[in-house]
Length: 245
Length: 299
Ligand code: SF4
Ligand code: SF4
Ligand code: SF4
Ligand code: SF4
Image 1 (tube, each protein chain N blue to C red):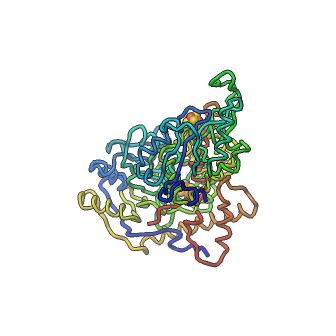
Image 2 (tube, protein in one colour; image 1 turned 90 degrees about the vertical axis):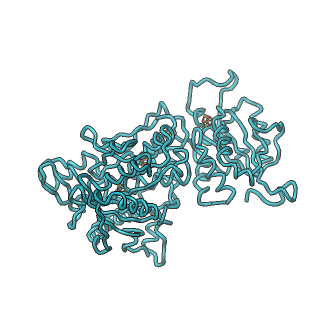
Image 3 (tube, chains in turn red, blue; image 1 turned 120 degrees about the horizontal axis):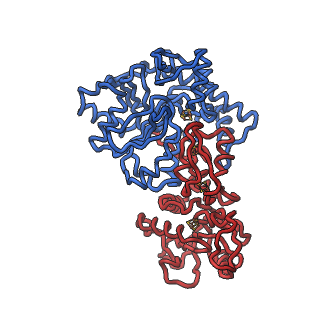
């Protein structure tokens, strides 16, 4: 259980404490996360945002139940190494938000892309950093993930809806993500129904649809390694509640 | 044990109607009228364009023209366009169950496209015994007929699945031959009747006749409203389960072939996709177990 009564600072304070942390990223995931809060104010009755470099003034990292983290860890950035240490110590669980933190995203396999500073050269997804390994429980795909996905995820986390959360637990132990996932895991295995959900999910237009063959096609040059295509594919993980009238 | 009974094959049924419309397919006319009445603000489906079937987003009633074949590839590619670009919020989706599956998943998790949960007003599932690419369809016709001919329409008769050919002839499709030519994934499909949609549509031989299986309140209310508003354009007659026993029979024949393909897949040890919790194995176990299972928990 990621939160227990002993964690609460005051007896009457039952809110789940969450923080949002920023590694090497474009901040798109944090914007999506804050958008989610805007759309879902009712969550604020149960959740308290204790840290966000955009919304809170706090400078030190407090103890919290759930740390949401975006971005890849830059090996040369000492602040990233110390933030990783602090999160490992102060968060009960970590949820990596978006491609950079979960699978490497644009930072992975993007040889030649311009680093934020000349000294910033090497990046790793948080899911691969040893000190965080026991803590990173869920990985959320997307670049950035939709606010509606973050909202549903947050509700599932608060309700401890294991069925909903399980795929995200699998994703936390997945290495890499790309459009080749749907090719390899779905199309090549004879499971593609040609619904086109992966194409709509792709934020980079790396997936297109071939009407002659009734299957998606993949252009690796555009892929930002976000994992949305396989995650959205109805053939990748099942079951999920179907409407039964 | 799972049984190949009516509830497995056809799912929950609230009412069944045969609808005869003036001129065009009753489903097409109903969607046009729904859009005119502003019950829906868009339709995502597929239509014939330049000799091939492509997914299409219809934003005006006059544009609506549904695919005459059982081909709805790529329909969900239009979700983001409809919801995030055009901000449509009462969309009707018309497609077979696998497309609905992608839609349901997107609605449940929110992956793929933002706020799909609240943007879909009606799900019309198309009864489906398998999808074919144009090339497979040509080969199937050649195999069954011994000569090439274009298929203009796909529909269901008392004898089973049939194609209306360009010469005006009708070709009855043998289910086993059909099983050979459909897309690979269709050989493992367990939801041919589009359980879980608001309405399942079954086209009949005459272009202006079709059967509607009503499954949800929403589906029933919508059709009820149109029946009242347009009595001269849409003639509804109520059907009993026994009236669609030919559909149940056809689905049973195809489902036996599909189950056989799944069991073979498991026996040979062909892998499923990662993260899928080994659903084919799970099906294999449930299929061979004694006890009551909810099929929705398996798939
Ligand atoms: S996953 Fe995409 S949106 Fe999120 S931080 Fe990385 S680049 Fe930005
Ligand atoms: S193909 Fe598109 S959806 Fe898939 S991982 Fe690449 S960018 Fe993401
Ligand atoms: S989402 Fe649909 S089209 Fe894309 S790989 Fe999966 S089944 Fe095929
Ligand atoms: S048989 Fe199933 S998987 Fe194939 S097109 Fe029809 S509904 Fe989709």
